[in-house]
Length: 487
Image (cartoon, rainbow, N blue to C red):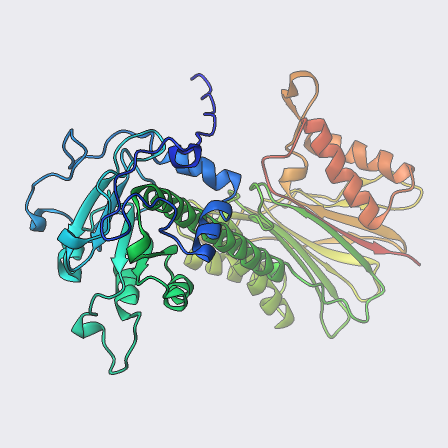
């Protein structure tokens, strides 16, 4: 599909002096200098940035909305056939001609000029309502701006027993929260007009100093400012949600409980989801009162938000069960029950690797539930994978499954690396047709160890190299945990 060609910013006719204006009704004949107070006029001419000014031109170039006649006026369908403000879709993207809803109790003597035009010379349609009840029926989704006479009486149901001179404006703002509103007040009543803007109107105009040129300009800028305000509010809300999600996800990442242990801990985590902090991979490490250090790493199939939530639940359950004294087959069997209860689909499963290191640090018990075996590195020996012959099934696949616990000799000095399959499933080679695999990962770590990399530095280098070999970001979540023991 061809790329769209950006439009040049249209200069409003009112600004270039080409607007068609009619004689002011209810004001001095031929007076085109009034209509907005000194403060309000300055705001209307300078408060809208370039991006918003472009939005002004955008609102006049879309097709004519349904429900209007070819002459640009509203159709004659019954008022009860039009959707109410509550039923109309959210306003914010004007289409076709601009439409103004004027709420004034004496439309015949109104100062509004009929010959209102937009920057392209198209007429601005005007609908009139004598009261708020009639206005509510006319407030359809193709209305872009409301001109409200502040002298109108407020509806009885809006009163609260106090004398609020802006009660009618507040009622309209509640009725039409997505529409631009211009407040119409008596000449010289600057204080009331400014208060109307503070309450929520986009601008205020003086009733006896109004002409078509300035009203047309005020309508266009009010619509643009309303759109700009809504866009800014949505952007702010989006940023706040992103910050809250980031804080939540950071809070869900584990804090190792290794107080009193001589072992050193390091971890790297990279979720597969774009702009996410947490994926379906999970890990944890705790030290129990008897001095045993328990480490775990797991992977829920998939890498979306649901998988991330399930991974957090399994990690928390693992920590609680471990601190309660469970380990090995009993621990994994209980975790499978948690998984089966919490998963959203019967096909969801999770792989898991658990290691419990004896208090003296020389031996460990290993349980694998469909998970890759850890990598053990010791001085004077090449790094190698721990035995995985007794690897049990992933959690959630087989009811009543068993997971044997293997005893492993570690020695006096060692580094143990636990990882998820995101580290070994990246693509390598010409055309990226092959997987790195466990053999490729072992060779890579051996070389990095020979270069003197250890702990956090080693994990960072490993994850970055796997990503580079893949030719870009990895599609799956990656979690890597390193435990080191020095004599």
